[in-house]
Image 1: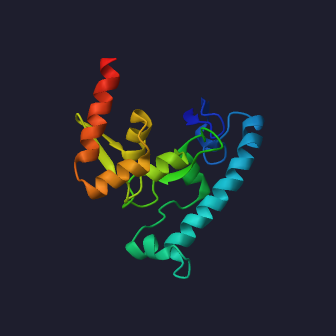
Image 2: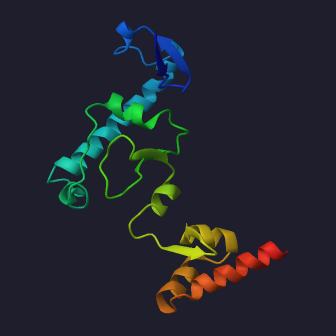
Image 3: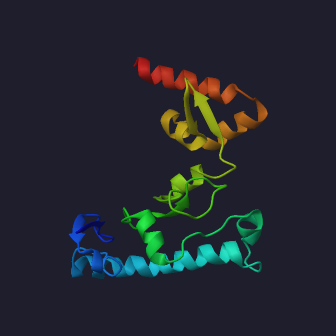
Length: 172
């Protein structure tokens, strides 16, 4: 018997090796629930391939044009790499933006997580903790545009203000 993780609910179950290629769900209800996700994954998979392979796609220059490839051969491989979708607000994200769409470099992420994972995200290091500008804005209550303005016009000032704000919270 081979141990498999259900693509619908994430539960582990065992099947005979002879059925390994066909069965990926622990029950029919998980298979039905998964159908909607498979349809959306089909769309995601097609979009990934278009961005990376079609020179006429509007985003080709920042995907395929810089060498990013889709290394999944099928939607099933993509589904196996991602595991069950945590919720409807989650979409596929590449962990390393310079890496390919491949196992180990894709994950489910919210739009906020994806925005923090952009190449142009601004990160501040405060007391050895490195987080994106949006995180420090939430923690301190200082508007993110003000932090950005300080970052651009007064290098190092935003980090000092964040550090003082964080210390004042921890002292109270």
